[in-house]
Image 1 (cartoon, helix red, strand yellow):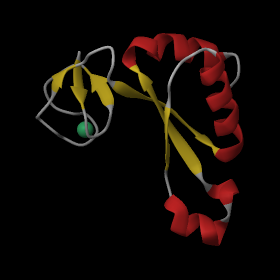
Image 2 (cartoon, rainbow, N blue to C red):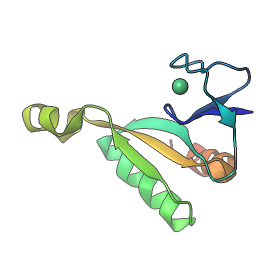
Image 3 (cartoon, rainbow, N blue to C red):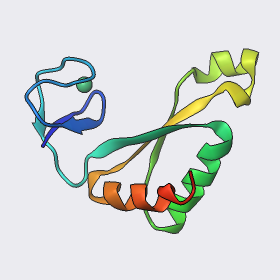
Length: 98
Ligand SMILES: [Zn+2]
């Protein structure tokens, strides 16, 4: 499996399916990989579930602070990333929640 460190996603093949990057490397268990995107309300629940299960996660806002000031937090959504080693377990945990 190959890994694109720009998108933090993994896939088969030699070119990133998301950004076209060709400078890929082999996926390793410590690499953060994209898990899912959720809105502000669900995001806090997801963070709790992962934390309670000892899975470190990275959370990245999609629209950024400037837009939040105008639109409010309800319009923000978050991308979640977890280490690849914990990817399957995370999906499993969250399948009950979502
Ligand atoms: Zn990419």
